[in-house]
Length: 451
Image: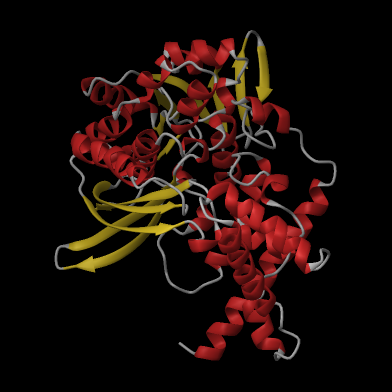
C-alpha cells in the first residue's frame, strides 16, 4: 500500500482527524505496532505531504520543475505495460522525448527496436555497444527466482536480436518495506542461474526499497539490464526487405507463460519455460558468421506475434505474411495445449520465439546453425511490399492487428478486457500533450544549465 499516495488522494476532501485515524488503521494492517505509534506515523506522512502542497509562492519555473504534466489518463486505462495498442502509443511518446535530444545514438528508442545502440571508434575499428533493460513480470513478485530467471533471459534476448554478443548483466532490485529479505536472494539466484548457463557475468546492481518508508507490503519490482558488443552494424528491424523469408524458433514462453501457468494452477508448464534456447540459437548464428546476411531479428514478446508483426510493419513499411499452421507448430506443445485449453490466443501473448528475417538463399544455412544448437526452427512466412502484417490459414487471409491489451491470460485480465476504450483518441491526445510538455521542460532545463 502506498501510504503517501493515500494521503495525497484524500487530504483535500477528508478532515484531518479522519484521515489520520484511517491511515493509522491501514498502517497497523502491515506493521505490528501499537495504536500510538501508528498514529505518529500517520501524522508524519500527513505533515510531509502537506508541506509538498505549499507551492503557491514559488516562481513559475520552479513550480514547473517540481510538478509533472498531467495527462489525466491512468496507466491501466491506457493499457501501459499490457503490450497492446495503448502501450505501443505511450512507448512511441517516450521515444519522442528521447529522440528530441542531441546525443548521437546509433539506434535510439525512436526505432522501437529491442535494444539501443551506440557506436564508438577503437584502434581496431568501429565497435557497436548494445544495451537493453527489462522489468520483472509484475505477477511474479511472489516467485522471485522465476521472476529473476525470466527477466534476465528477456534482457539478454534484446541484446542478442540486435546481433550483439552479451558481455555483462546488471541487476536492480526494489522490494517494499515489509518484504522478506529472502526475496532478494531468490531473485538474484534466478538472475545468476541464467548468467551461469550462458556465461555472461553479473557485474553491478542496486538494491532499494519500493517507495522507501511510504510503501507498505512485500511487492518486488525489479529489472535486469544487459550489455553487448559487436564489430558489425546491428540487425535492426528497418533492414527487412520484400522477398525475405521469416524464420521462427520454437517458443516456450517466459514470464507471461509462467504467470498464466501459475495462476491457473498448471504448475507443470513452468518447467517448459526454463531454458536458454533463445540465447543458444542467437549464439549459434553468431558463431556461424551469419549475422551479416540477416536483415532483422526480434523476439516474439510485445503482445505476441500480433504486436511484433504490427511494430515491424509500422516502423519499416514492409508487409509480413505468416502461415498460421507453421507459426502454431513453433509453439511448445505443452504451452500450446495450455493456451488452447484456457482459450488464450497464442498470437496475442509473448511466446519468446526468435524471429529471423533474411534473404531466401541463406535461410537453410540459418536453419542448420540453429538446429545444430538443439533448437527447433522453421520457415513461417515471407516479407512483402504490402505494408500490412497478414496471417494466412484455412483458406483465409486476416490482418494481424494488436489488441488494445495483449490476450488476457489471467482471470483478472479477462475481467479488465482488451476492448479499445471509446474515448481512446481523446486519451491519445492528452497523452501526446503531456509528452510535449515534458519535452518543453527538458529543453528549458538544458538551456538553463547550459551544455
